[in-house]
Amino acid sequence: MRVTSRRRLPATPAAVWKLLAEPYHLTDWWPGYAGVEPDRKGVSPGARWQVARTRRPGLVRKPGAEGLIVIERVEVERELAWSDLAQRFDVQVQLEPDAGGTTVEVAVDAAWWRLLGEGLRTVPKRALLRLERLCDTASSL
Image (tube, rainbow, N blue to C red; front, side, top):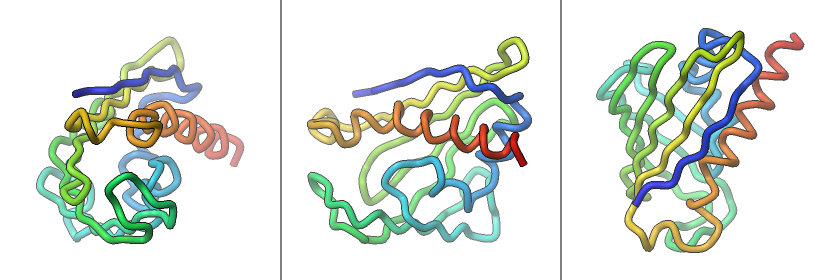
């Protein structure tokens, strides 16, 4: 099952990509991750990043537990996709130029039961709101 959210951000695709392509920014905009330790491949297909989840408990995850995400696809200024192996969901972030800004779509694919409740089902929308705030902060520096 797939849930998506789409939002226009007031930043160029290059500016949004700079935030997405920096592994340590993942915790700033992706809900549920409190820490990340990328491997030496950085943002490239096949890279494996250790992630620490937040202290908030989930339906089937332990608070503060560690996991592994694998970067599946990278197309500079267009797409970033990864799989969270422990939580068994896939993420796709697509960027599209939009009159001086960028339209970003975030999609999460998971088994239907993983999307029960408010947790994972609302992650795309929350991720975009956090990414928008991050873009606003970056542009004001």
